[in-house]
Length: 91
Image 1 (cartoon, one colour):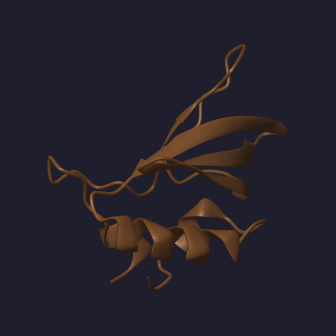
Image 2 (image 1 turned 90 degrees about the horizontal axis):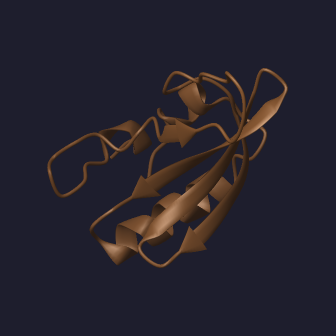
């Protein structure tokens, strides 16, 4: 399975992650930016993504803990890589 094939409870794609900008007019389309960090918070991953010189936060949730563990490992190994390219990695 590829990262971009992951689905949530409502059978919605979870990749690329949805992102939130903290200030100003930063608009980041899903798939834009470079992965800068990954942090596990319960049943989800918090992702730090850099785009246009700013950092934004993305969120990824997955129903299966074992799948989330695998995704966390893959993402952690691909820090500083483009979000778009990460979607094609195997989990």
